[in-house]
Length: 328
Image 1: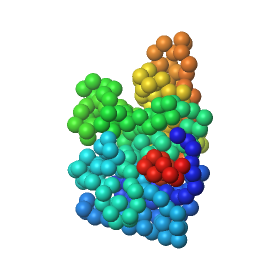
Image 2: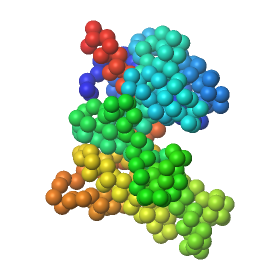
Image 3: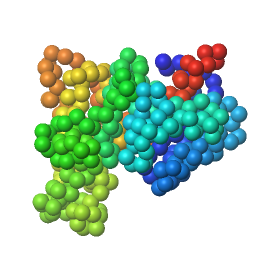
Image 4: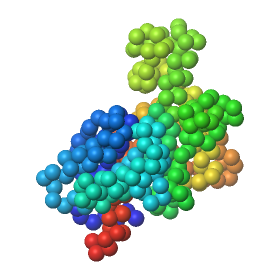
């Protein structure tokens, strides 16, 4: 699955606030890129994706296909976004719209799956064929690589790992349930936890509060990271608590999937060892029967913000090669 041929493909990372597109070569290098705000009008988003694709392919004659990573539920055919609440989409036939506008083959994938694939082929998953990636950002998503292939499930919607219920009758979740792991292990939960801890003990949180507006409500994730890197005990405790939840999630998922590497991405993954260390300790403590099994390696993502774009472009490359075997 990792073999590549010549030529470029375009990857699109579609989020609620921005559309990032780039022409990507077989080695995973982004040779041309553009970033456009996501239109507020849902009916304009698909046309804006097509515009971004056309802009990054200018000056490049050998662009073969397009991959779109979208924040939502994507069908088994990788053509239609069934539901994307942040985009206002229901049953949006993105593949057909972008293909017609660009004249290129198009494949659509969930954005977290695309990011996981990007880390697998050109990032922290190197050297492993069984990988689990968690995206600990505003939400808590992820992707599953099994035997060198992206695991999508029968209906294309596997990997929604943020919405298994970790705490019965726990915190409410926008998905309509209560106690989803997203409410405890995400980057947003990390920030909320810091604010709650600061409100409970503002004196102990003085150093990190000084980096913001002085109030718990004004505390942001980067403030906690900066203070923790300076050795602030309060901020390190916030990371320790978030790491315990993240490690629990990794252990729960590893018990089911048994990967050889666990990759932490998203905003929390960007903090490096600050989150990796406590998460790994928690994972090893929480993994059932751990003393009788092999622990997976715990890594943080290395492809950064380009992971989704690179992954979508690579999935488009594979899809185009399969569809056009003469190019192999």
